[in-house]
Amino acid sequence: MGIVWTAPLRKLSVALLVGCTLLAIPASARTAPAAAHPLVGIGDENLALFSDPRFLALGITQVRFYVSWDVLSSAYKNPYRRDVLAEWLADARGLGLTPLITFDHSDRHGLGDRLPSVAQYSNAFLTFHRRYPWVSDFATWNEANYYGEPTAGSPKRVAGYYLALRRDCPTCTILAAELLDLNNPREAVGDVEWARALIRYARTQPAYWGLHNYVSANTLSETSVKQLLRAVRGNIWLTETGGILALPHHGRPGFPLTSKHQANVDRFLLDTLPSLSRRIQRIYLYEWRSPSKHATWDSALISYANQPRPAYDILADALAAWGIAPDCTVSESPPACHTATASSSP
Image 1: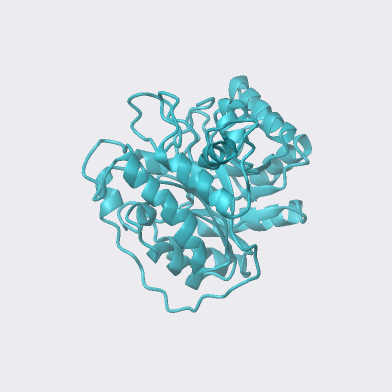
Image 2: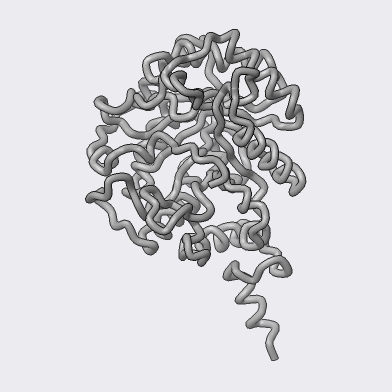
């Protein structure tokens, strides 16, 4: 990766993925108008994404980057990370892509477990917004209910961040938080419980939520998405998800760590889950290319050996079925390009 920020879930043991307890929600789901299919994005901080013809051929318009909330602070002393962020955003803009920026804990030494005040958070956002005024999609906090984040016990503070973002950028699309579907009380506050607490403190129903549904997706379960749909009124973006091929600590996760299973998971994400509700508006698959041969976390569509995995074909076929035809002049990797070449042969 261009920037080595490890998402909290990728630090969890395999046992946590298996031993999650799901909460029952009595509230009824509500449906809002949306497109006939969700928008699909890729979450990957690696700059190489934007020069890969296999990505460019797919016609994907959404990308996601998560970043320290104070990355543009005058106290932030790592220019490399700022430079990668700047180049990543410039590349995305040059290609006409829409970035989703997710804010996360500070990666400055000794500050990872400290929450900024609402005023500090707001000032940091305004600095970001002045630097990149064309960016309009933001998530208030990454995996806010996970105990690896300082927000897990502070939905009130995150509600303050959310309201500040809405005030500071009324034309932006603001996700109240991105939640992790790890409903194990030893490791996370239940995503539904946490979302309801934020709603209470914000005294409003946010229009958008993010969900990282790795646990349920990899067991081909609709449960976590259905529960969040019933618990909130807003639209849901699956802002980080995908079939898993490698996990921290290597264990028995309760599902096969194979490319075939990864493809089945991504098919489930793209074909089955969107049928639950039109409020499921976006799906961001993580990640594009595996970062190393022996990566402890791997859910990439392209292997470390630079070969497309079966999940790549699943994604390309889903987009083509939705009428998003690949640009075969850029790359012939998408299966639809093979079909077009075969049908045009004498």
